[in-house]
Image 1 (cartoon, one colour):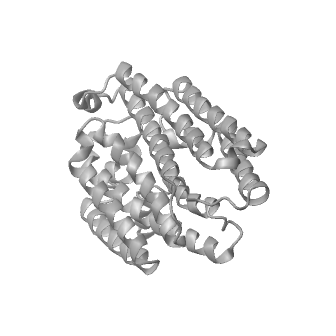
Image 2 (cartoon, one colour):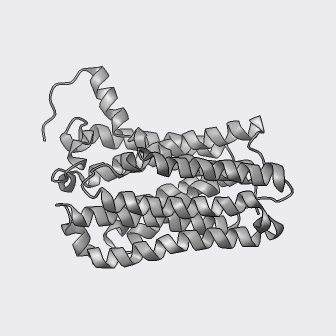
Length: 301
């Protein structure tokens, strides 16, 4: 698609939009370590976490741009993805390629300034997602698994920046939750007019429904196991209520996904649902009460 004549300001604007800033909300998983390491009110740790969050936004945007370049022909027939700047031809491919290379290089250099481990985590994330963009996204189950691992990398990067250990149950819960979201997005694709690529991978609505139910139960179960592993923490009223908020949040998520199959933007749909957002905020509040005031001796590991 030929792009219309654009002013320099418009070119910069469309380059910025090609970074998908609305999707930067996914990188809040970087702050999981800040919450669970008892450093939520430590300004140095807050600044370090915000820095890693910003760098991860740049790294993930690099992947978004590369994905749009690779999938531009397929996305042109998609009910919502056709509006992306690269797909519409508002950003020329040579410019997009050059921009993604520069953005990726700068972001990895910035990551290493936060520490060797942070840099290696983000480099691993970038490498894995490059393989995903060009090869692995065509393999059923592997594709959603890599998306889940991407969120695990976010948690690991935040933990590495603060030099804290990571609970295996936190990582497992994160993986299950992110994979659940990825499966729900696949289901939307199947139910839309843009389903052929997912049928080629071996997905079907019935198969995805089974996986979604399994992953939803796994998210709730893994969080309960995390609570149980905290010893006396499991007896706290705040943490028991947090289990209910997790349960409600997962069920509410499934409700809005199945009730709004016609919605085109999955991320905006989630962020616009007030009860779902409220359940997340309640969980954060209850976790702070339990870990910082009721049982302050319990740690992240």
